[in-house]
Length: 375
Image 1 (cartoon, rainbow, N blue to C red):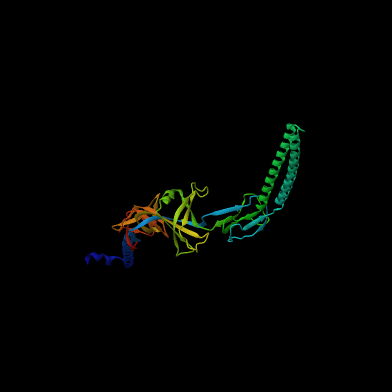
Image 2 (image 1 turned 30 degrees about the vertical axis):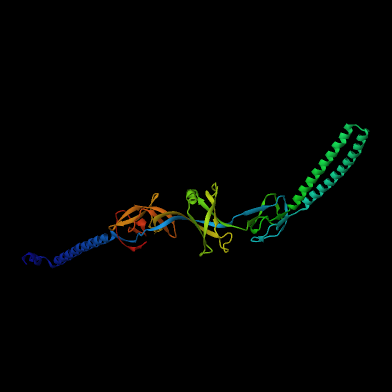
């Protein structure tokens, strides 16, 4: 107690102030130590991040691709008039069923009828000239036999008869041509089918050869798809083709590749491909949306992972792989896309655990805690 006797010798006021200063200092030191200890605990907790993971479980599956398309007819006729004129009648609508020989449209035939009348008059005139030439030829043949005229004079009338005969043939041919053109004023269906397009209306003046109606002929049905150039060879070697329909979820039809366009479309840079449907049911209608699933016979190990699990680093897709609670980036080879998922062809093995959420907030070598299910 002797070491504290000097405190009794100090003035009372100074003693009180000194004790206050000592108390404040002790409080500051204690708070600093407590804050440092709290930060140390917090930093240690932040070093281990909780992540959502999944365990890879591979399966054997055939590699394939899906293309969207439209149901089309095997034969589609784009019809137009063979002569120019103004449309007077339209006898069909979109979806109308037509038979062979049905009149679809008619253009104004008045000018064509005038041409027929003119050519008919020319035929009559030529036939009259032919009769006169034939009568003269017969008379001068008799005169030649009696020696009243020379052979040269007879040859002149023979030539006149041949000219008149050729004129009749020419006029008859022009008349036939005019009659055909008059018949061309009626646009007829050449095959039974259904109207899928009408591009001209009454009162419109059309030119010869201009498409005004499209008829899909009765018969086979096909699906037209567009395929990028890097898939053409795989498509040619496809072992099987399945066709599904958006409006008919329970219908799947087998198909065969009938035609591949030799050149790419100038706008889309894709190749048109026609898929023939094998024994299509009656409920499949023209214009329906179809999904063509093209698969090959090569069976490969693959797994579908969520798109959110892919970490894109440059051109190489990667995933975060967890080994002994530490993150590491693993390159993968991807395949086809699904509904919010992507197919992994190589890079992962059965039993690997990957991060499937928040992949862009992680870093190499980071320690993590995890939880999740198997894929």
